[in-house]
Structure formats: structure tokens, C-alpha cells
Length: 429
Image (cartoon, rainbow, N blue to C red; front, side):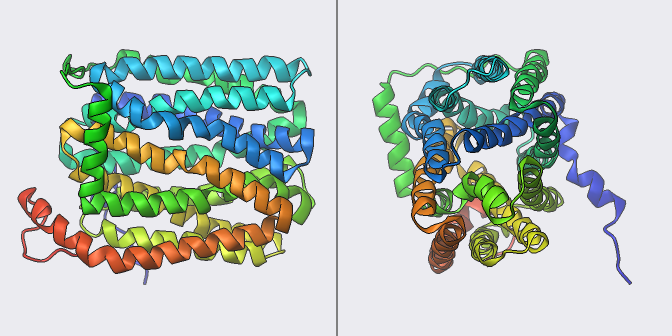
């Protein structure tokens, strides 16, 4: 007989929502992120429709993400000098303008690939400040540090629920009235998250003045990341997965159009399948009651992502590919959320925004090079062989991290014991 978890486990899974500020953020962001995923799918299909080029899909992904690689460390330092809430209000407003500009050009039927790339660069600049700001702002929205891991898991579940809903809606909208309406819906959806930020009650202590120069603070942050083995090891694997594993999404329009001979609805199904896997990952992490054990999940997640990509490249059966993308999405999000939770748990408050800047650099910053590489390889060898090659590198990264895990645990053990997470002398996470 299958035994379901007790009801107390489900209520425990949503405990971070008892914090008013996080609850506001959750509901506002839930609406906005659906629009964001609509725009992501619509942009990919628009580029494919305009060019039918794997290389230009890669170039568009590169252009939209390279500003994050260049600016994220600077953004992490700058955020220590201002209110994170105010910064997020401005980034969300700027992102709304970017989506509305895409909508206006597309609906007027004058959009060109050059304009898509230019607006993608603008969104990349916004993300360089928005992503580390959002991650470090979680600590201010959730007053009890014991609920931080749960808040990260809930946030991941929300993003991936939207990742499931947004592409499905986008596929229908594109098929009915075109990509421009997806961009318009996205631009309007930002009003929800801006309203939630303005309604929050934040203690006026987030902006800190320092005598150090910004360059000096960036160097301090880099020295901390480089010297602290757990964070350094996690970020290295994270960078490899971001470079080689995550850009498979850039190639999904090619799979939809060339491998499975479909259209935007097919692309929506492929994107939605990986979204379901990621959503299940987020829910499983929300049900956890401790961060202990998460470091073991990180290489397992990278291995699942790599293995799923290899098999996805071999598959030419649509339903089987959807099943494989469930595992790809699960592995992708499990690694992301587990890494984020461990880092946020370990890092001291005075280093938080700087470390999250480097986290964003490893997460989003490596993706443009991966997108460009994936587009180039797909142009040369085809999309299926490309994801098989990149998946193999993810598997190799998982093996390397597993070999490093005993050394990582040795450093984490006294920290977790001091935090009261390890009453015993042994660490298993």
C-alpha cells in the first residue's frame, strides 16, 4: 500500500509563506513569471521564424546573456550601497519597457533580428542587477533564517509552475495571433510584482555605506569565493552545467521544427515537459525539513541532467523525448535550487550580495557562451548530436564534484554544527 506524507508535511512545505513580505512577493512574482516564460518561448520562435538558423538562435541567446557575465560582480557590490527593494522596483519597470518595446515592433510587423538582439542585450543588463538582487533580497523577506531554504524551494516551484503554464499559453497565443501579444501580456504582468514590492514593509537598514572602493569590494568577494572550498566547488560545477547543460533550451525550436516537424505548439510541449520536471524538483525540495543532504544532490542532479540530454539527443520519438525532458528539467532545477540553498546558508551577510553576484555570473553569465557554442555546434553537427556532446560534459562534471565531496563536507561540518544543523559529529550533506 502506498502511504502518502502526513498533512503536517504539506503545511510545513509552505511555511515561508507565513512571512508577509515573502507572501506578497510570491503572488506578484507568480503572475509576472508566467509572462516572462511566454516571452522566452515567443522570442525563440520569433528568431526561428525570421531566420531558420541554429547559429542565429545561439547568437541571440549569447547577446541576451553576455551583459550578465560582464556586470554581475559589479552589480553584487553596488547592491550593498542601496536598497535592494528599490533596485528591484527599477529593474522590473525596465523589464516591462523592454517587453512592451518588443510587442510594439512585432505587432507593427517591422521587427528585425537586429532589434531582437539589441533588446535582448538590454534585458541582459537588467538581469545582471535583478537576479543577484532578487536572490539576496530573500533574506530580508524571510525574517527567520530557518525558513530561508523553504523560501528558495517555494520560489523555484513558483518559477517552474510558471514555466509550465507560460509556454503552454504562449504556444496557443502564437498560433492564434502571433508572438507580439505574448510580449504585450508580459509587459503588463510586471505591474503585479512592482505592486507587491511597493506594498512590502522593509526595515530601513538595507543600504550600507563603506569606505572601500567598488573594485576593492569586488576583489574581497572574489578572494572569499576562491578561498572557501564549498562555494568555490559548487560554483565551478554550476558554471560547467550552465555552459554545457542549460543551453539545450536554445535548440528546442530546432527539435520542434526539424526533428519532430511541428510548430509553436510542439515547442510549447517540449518546454512544458522540462518545466514539469523542474516543478516536481521544487516541490520535493520544499518538503525537506533540513539543508543537510543537499550537497549530495548536486552531483546527482548534474548527472541526471547530462544523462537526460544524451538520451534526448538519441530519441526521435516525441513522447519519449517528452519523458526524457522531465528528467532533464528535474536535474536542472534540483542542481540550481540545491546549490542556491547551500550557498545562501553558508555565506555571511556582509558577503551575501557579492557572492550572489558571482553566483549569477556562474548561472546566467556562462549561459551566453554556452548558447553561442550550442548554436555553432548545432550548425555544424545538428541539434541532436550537440545535446549529446554537452550532456557528456555535464556527466564528467558530476564525477569530478563527487570526488571533491569529502573535502567539501570537511569544511562544512563545523559550520553546520555551529548553526545547530548537525547535532552529531558526522555530516551527510
